[in-house]
Length: 140
Picture 1 (cartoon, rainbow, N blue to C red):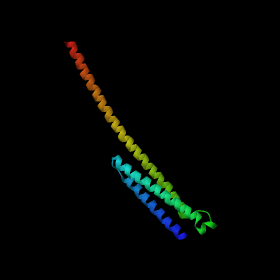
Picture 2: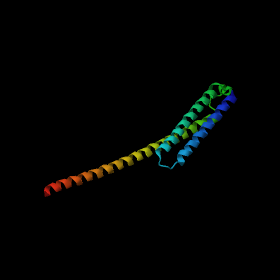
Picture 3: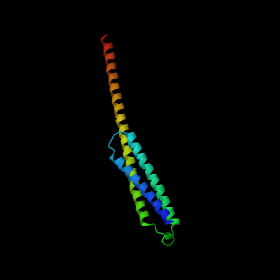
Picture 4: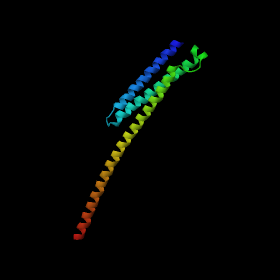
């Protein structure tokens, strides 16, 4: 059984490594394209969920099927390390999601400012044309 637990631990470490790589990609992304950042953050969230699933599987196997745990119920050190790594990386995924929300909010804000400028220009044109009509009618 310990061999089986070791295999699951390796899968968990691979999932952790994948998540770390996904986060590095997000952190290196400097482009303004929100869809690209959305995809990268979605990859991070998917990898975080995979890591969590693997870690839960590892915890169950280590707790219930390892003969060593029948004597000592405390989790193995590697499991504690992986839990901490998951917490740290999950916080980074949350930060990446906040960055995405801010980026999307900034794009929306820029779009709204652009729309506001167009409306302001349109209002000025209406005022000018209204003044011209009013001014033209007075001179007749």
